[in-house]
Length: 128
Image (cartoon, rainbow, N blue to C red; front, side, top):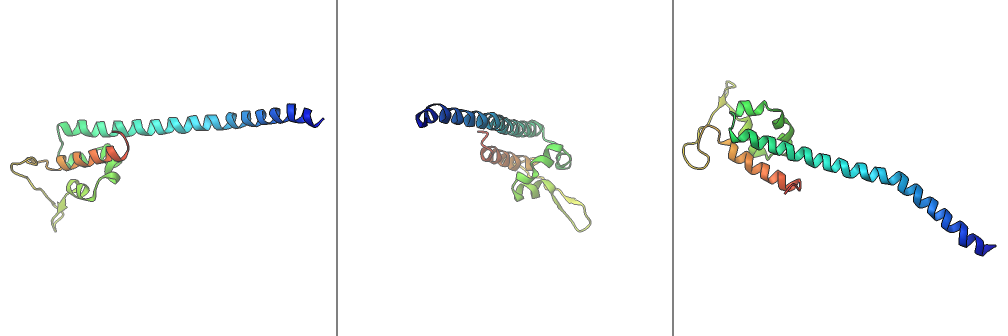
């Protein structure tokens, strides 16, 4: 009798247990993998959208209004946020700095700093 239990019942119970585990665990693992893929795709799209915007850079005021800026602001370095947000005088007017010459020359010197931060974020997120 005990040989019959070991031979037939134990494998049946183990098979049932394995089937139940895979039935309930399989979809959850699939959902988790797909959620990670979706998150990575959204991150790639965000960084690509920002880089496309910066190919013809808007003013800092226009850039601050972009929905992509609100998505990425928490990942930017404090220095970059300060550069984009700007500094204001005692009357509340923005102080605009125009860098003459050099790699940061022009009216939008925030672009180089922002691109550096985007590259860092891309590495941190494991996209490259």
